[in-house]
Amino acid sequence: MSWLLAFPIIIPFATAVIAFLNRDKPTGRWWSVLGSLLLLLASGALMVRVLQEGVVAAQMGQWAAPFGITLVADLLSAVMVVITAITGLAVAVYALADIDTAKEKLGYHALFQVLIAGVVGAFLTGDLFNLYVWFEVMLISSFGLLILGGSREQIDGGIKYVALNLVSTILFLSGVGLLYGMTGTLNMADLSLAVEEVENQGLLTVIAVMFMVAFGVKAAVFPLFFWLPASYHTPAFSVSAVFAGLLTKVGVYALIRMFTLVFDHDIGFTHTILLWVAGFTMVTGVLGAAAQQDFRKILSFHIVSQIGYMILGLALYTPLAIVGAVFYLVHHIVVKANLFLVAGVAQRLTGSTDLRRIGGLYKSAPFLGFLFLIPAFSLAGFPPLSGFWAKYLLVKAALDIDAWFIAFVALAVGLLTIFSMTKIWGEAFWKPHPDGVEPKLNKIDRADLWPLLLPIAGLATLTVIIGLSPEPFVQFAERASDQLLNPQAYVAAVLGGAS
Image (cartoon, rainbow, N blue to C red; front, side, top):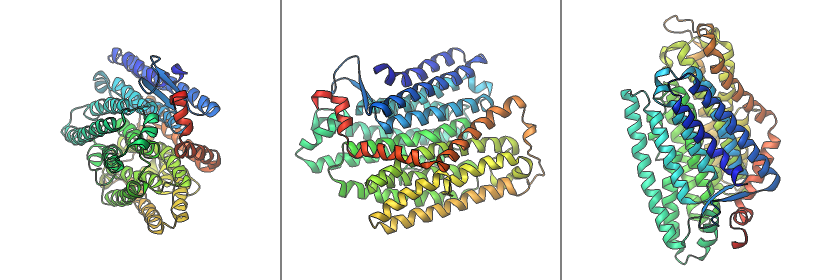
């Protein structure tokens, strides 16, 4: 069992070492693809075990919980590892054509694999201090990827990115220290029991708010999101895609984990704050997107907007709402990463991502236009794509408890999302190119064409599958929601007889 949980972390680290040693050779990029494929197989094996046996846990070095390093996977952890592996493989293939030799020699593939390892580690860790360690692994590798190339715009975005994330880290560590002082443990399963014995519940609520802010920075919620649109449009498109798909979701995952497993003692206060945060995050993100004229900046603001929906599911804190949040997490990772990959092909064909300087993509590359419409319509919530079911679950959960206003906000933000996607379609795909350029796909070298289009087509297919056959995915989310709201199995798997 320990190897089954450790392999999804070991594989990307080992791949990073091999890719770095081969960074000056063409084989370096193929090692990255192979490692990503192996990670997908390992994550699939872990998912099968979790589906068969429920929550699985292992103690590294045979140190019994809560004293040692615990790796644990429930349904939410397992599906997040699987979707990370899918996204990682798609981006690794895309990078074959997107990342130039200069960036490869600077260690792009090694940094990419270390980032994937950090994300997987954050999903599988069973204690707070190691969650901090994985956050730092992600921060260091993502900063390296962000500034790879060293342009002025990249450095500017990177400084904003790392500065606010360091503030988040300090707040996170402060909360960890205070929580340890009150409970004597950092194991999350043990914490779920220890917080019930804390006498000063008011101080515990203050610590909960500290964690809320720290994870809120990672998730890019209102009003802590400005680092994201300032930085996500600056690196290579492969980097933007993996950032958009995965990084903020680790913050959302941490919020869901901590505010269902540990900080559930003052729901009336903490989750009311989360409800307001969710509403403002949705609105500010979509309004920011509406004001932009750059393909990637629009998509970056929509990351913020869509994060609001996931936080909404946690804030409502009903079984159906948590189902919606889990479903939305999986759907959004696939869709958002895919849209950034499409933006990369559009930039290569037209020479820019500024909507005022590009156009003609539908006439010259109708297949790319079709591949754009699938994730774009899904993001906006068009039936029968995956985004429709995700939004439906959350809106219904809000209406079930008479939260009419937040349901209205969620629907209104969906309509404004349609406006942004329509703007991209009209400017980039429908209108002629202002310079009379014909952005034909056959102008891309054949060796580059399949690595660019294959991942986009694969992720679009997954979006359609989820949308046309939502029942098994919803049932899975229901089981995951039940584990989150009734964590006895999680606690028993980690602590065993000690629970």
